[in-house]
Structure formats: C-alpha cells, structure tokens
Image 1 (tube, rainbow, N blue to C red):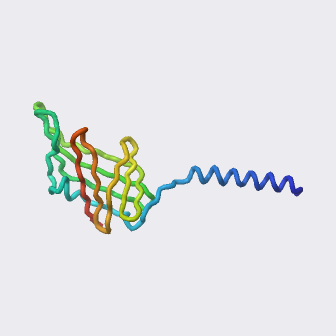
Image 2 (image 1 turned 60 degrees about the horizontal axis):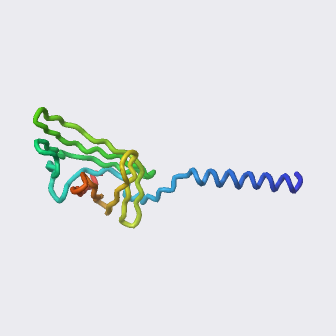
Image 3 (image 1 turned 90 degrees about the vertical axis):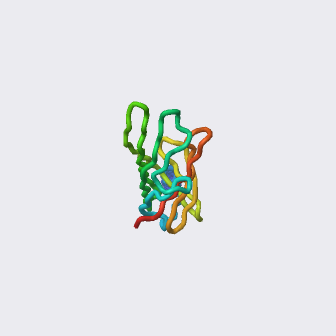
Length: 146
C-alpha cells in the first residue's frame, strides 16, 4: 500500500476513534457506591414525613423510598407519598431515573427530566438535598439495604 494510502487509513482511524470517544459515557462512578438503598430520613426525621410549604388544604406525606445505584453510572429512585386535598387522598410514587457520578464521597445525580442535584455518600449512606419549591429544600438520607 502506498504511503499516501497508509496516511489516509491512519487519518480515518484517528477520526473514528475521536468520534467514538466523544460518544463514550464520561461519567465517573465509584463502583463501591453501587447497591440498593432505603429512604431512612427526610430533613432528619424518620418517614412518614409531611412536606412543608404545600398550598393551604393540601398535604404531602412522604411514606418511603428506594434508591438503586448501578455500577454502570445509572440510578433509579422511587419516592412513595400520600397526597391529600380537600376532595381526595391518593397514594402515589415519583420515579426518577438518570445518570449518577460518584467520587471521593461526593455524588451528583443527573436525572432525565429534572435539574441536577448533588450530595454525599459513604460506604452505607447516600444523602442529598433538593429544592421542593423556591423557599423549601428537602434533605434525603438513604441507607444501604444490601
């Protein structure tokens, strides 16, 4: 193969490698954080927990939750709650999925349809705080269940 053909081939391979590296998942994830966690505290209180800042006549009580961190840098979270209005009471759940990065005790969640949020992790717990409204933030603590 002439030298020009070899250069073209190498150049093409370099472009392919660049494109593939741009498509790779750049999430940093400490695999020791992978596992299943159970919601154990909300703002320092054991569930059930009544969320502050709801409209008059409405209450939201967080009943329980589960968080799964996968070793591929993905997460799956379910928060179960009871919504009571003057007209009805409904038990519901919020399911959140997305990417997660964890390193050196810091963890960042990148959900599919929400803003990112961050917290901390240890060998047995994951904690983070989310804004429930413009004036109310809620801290969640999950404890390893496996």
